[in-house]
Image 1: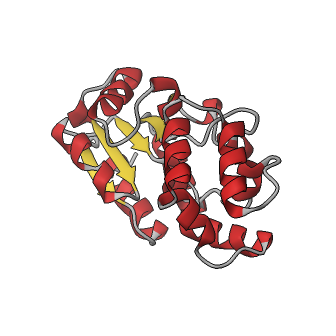
Image 2: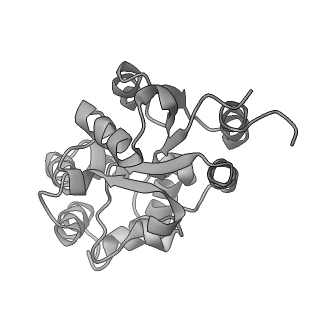
Length: 210
């Protein structure tokens, strides 16, 4: 029996790539920052939280993010997003699972809360841009970010599929319920890419021998 799903929707940072926390810790070491300083700037400092939220929905620029986060951390803001993501790498097993799915005729989309794409495009830099997917849905283009329900609807529209046709993978559990309400099968990716890739293969690939 053919696999029941026809679409795969993947988060970028922490799913298609290695873990965001490991990248952030490596950035702190490279910049000579105190452990936890970068995460505090992004997640707790009010100016950092505000500028990141604004960047995600296209209300500010990556260069402004560089300036604000660089100021909070007391480091050179020049090309800061590139430096901040320098240790983020494609996750080979998830990338390979996505490629297997696409080869099998599954439509594959990336759904990402954006890091900005100008002047530095991290998606293109990591080899996962327009040619890699059937659809790319970025929060800065859509003007809304996960877990706002409408961005999942736009992902389905971009794939021309129904929710029940699709599987969605994200490393943040809070991003899953809005997808589930649309009938999308969700996978919470944690720290085991082998397990996630195996589950994707079991859901998306036709087990019937050719």
